[in-house]
Image 1 (cartoon, one colour):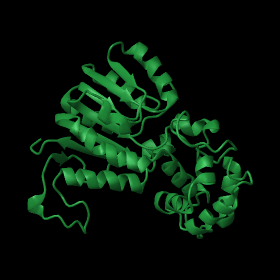
Image 2 (cartoon, rainbow, N blue to C red):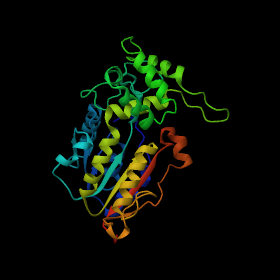
Image 3 (tube, rainbow, N blue to C red):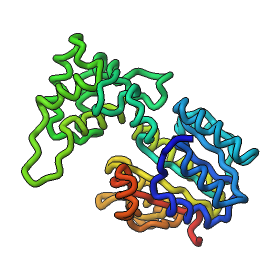
Length: 308
């Protein structure tokens, strides 16, 4: 097992305890912290865990030794959930974003804090690397990654700089890409919390390379369908784009308008679930102090069935 600190753990356990165990589904096993806690605190629970990262498979193998017969692991992207035959889960968890072990492994290229090959793949055995995406992607694809996924205000200038840098070796490593972005990123206004100028660009590229938003949007309905009546779907997101997708899906399931401009008449809405979080749950100051990476986390939960 790794030193991974699971985010909002007590809150996750509280929601999963509603059904007193049963078959649970962890779609983002990662370091295994949430799954381990579920198995420890709910002695009647079993867990089917999924993750596309090969490192997660090794983490799962060590955990299976301690919980014989109660943990099964599938080396899959959660977008492949439709191909899992089991259903009737009492709890489904999605802890989105990058795992601590992925960030801490410099060679994975998720961070610009140290120089490394620009990879960023959640599964380093499949798909194109971030460097290949920047070298071969269209200008429109790169602009979408920076503008829509990274929410980078200088997206146009940075995208053009990336296109101009092709073939020069500047897009192959994290340090050279970060330096390129820094030349074109806006200055931080006085008094505002400073983040590295490349933060938003790296986020947008990572989301694009791993198709994170498309996979989330496609998987949420399948995950809800897999629940038993009364079962709970818990999703932890780490930025506004993920949270917006989750919020709108949950509101749709609960028979509510998805946003202020939602045109669907109320009488045409179908109520399939009950919101357990009117507003997202966020980490306490103590949790953020213990685990600074939790500071942007938002948890939303919904149960299947309208009268629960």
